[in-house]
Length: 342
Image (cartoon, rainbow, N blue to C red; front, side, top):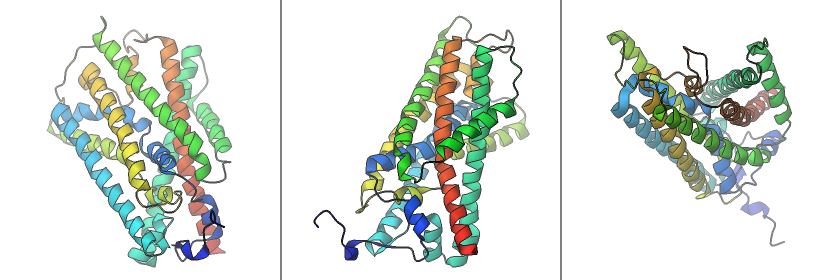
């Protein structure tokens, strides 16, 4: 039939791709879906730490590192995508980082080097998101119950239960609607953080703006490394091949559109939050910008409590979307390892 894909037109997959991989990474998505997946896997609440990174770098170095990080990662992801496109045009469409490493670097590099690193990255993202999600849930709880006695680990468990529900989605492609909502959420909490920073910075109780880099030489050096690590983390993505695998054939050009869409969101959110947050709080910026919305001396919020509740809600929901994306890749890796062990 005209709408069916002939067997000779289908690109060959990697030699070791199993049926489970083909099910999890269904190639049915459009470039819009690709953009949603990319945005969710890159633009995460870690961007709320960018004003803190600027604290160690200052205005010029901070903006330069932010621009440099965007340029380097966009170029790297584009090269990776073009490499996948090239192999797909030759009849080998690779669905995973492990497949690329297997055929480009060799089987041992794929299994014992690239695979474990990708697994460690995904595992770290899921754990970090669960902890941060628990902290945001606790912040929402304290807004409603200032004298509440619930502990952080209880909120981490609650967030874990939410992930358990979302993890029931059967394939990466089935997350497209969650990830489209995630894109909206990251815009909402980024705009909220920027608006709150401007509101506080222009208010009568605005903190004194001091942009000098404090500390001795050793502290400043370690601060620079810390800031660069934060910026590198915010731009990181360890699942580019898996995202490109969800695009329906032909894939040429679709990934580039998705990357452009993603980096448009990156530029809007990262630079807005970093610049407004550092402008408002200077070298008093905390590791998580929301904590600056609380006056440490008086214990009162500098913005309405309903606003604190709302921005934390946006953050929790987006954290769950980010975590479930990387959780799917972890399940995928476990499935592959299980099949090859037995």
